[in-house]
Image 1 (cartoon, rainbow, N blue to C red):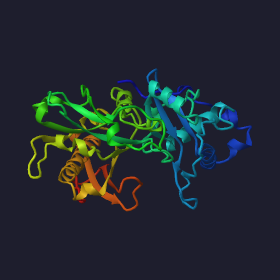
Image 2: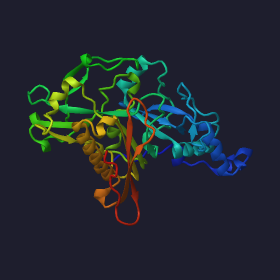
Image 3: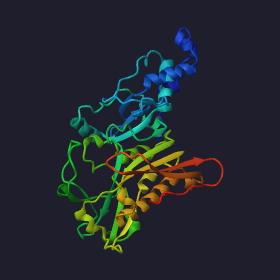
Image 4: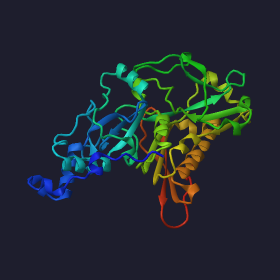
Length: 379
């Protein structure tokens, strides 16, 4: 495994005696860290970790509430603030202390290929340009979570994959062409069946005949997006970066959107009102490649209220999704390595439009007692 990268000031630490002449360094470290915190607050950087993948790093969390008591929250700037903090390169000790503070709070909130980043930059002038700051690295942050909800950038769509043509080939329903505006509305006449390659994403061999198979799988490469600003949730980039590398990430939050299928394709679900002619599975095993070293994993599922009761297929898939989220979350906190965990789930009373509900699941690693907790929300 590739080790977590070290910076030059860690390999050769600054001497504390070299800065004693400055009144600033006579302040207690705790006070200096508070100053660094407010200098970093609201900063948002886009950085390429290698030649292929880019990542968004944010310091602080977005809030609509100006009276929010937490000092880690900030009001959003309608434009990305990717400027470097003043004083950063004043001296080696200041740089070292400020970077320690940065990685103490900073989160990774987006993952994208270089090709997708270029497409987004052409579609939106406000796209943040790649930072030339070379001390940014996704493997140094401790938290991956949803980004600033100024745009719908961070929700991964779940897709309905089955044999739509009777040929034994798996396909997915997507829009016929890409759109670059949020004002476009999805309509059935703009949808078509596209063949999909699930190699390396789903272990198809364990599911049997593809002609009678139905799968719910995350769109890991975000190919189904209908707006270029949604490009920052290519989960496959995150897996590719972390799969064979050591990292410092302990807290993982990922969001998903309940699968949608236009009415004219409902026939292919294989449901005649009482029974299914197809066997449906939810598979998120690809995420297990991230690692089993997380201390906390949270999944959010944005769903329509019809998924709770009105449509049998949606109700059944909703139940399977909850079970698969719980299974994968336990794996990611190290259940297979003997780690103990506690599980809880909930429904958000104030969901974000256009969907009507948000179901959340959290699995945390604990030190004592038996593993405990089960899914309580049954729809």
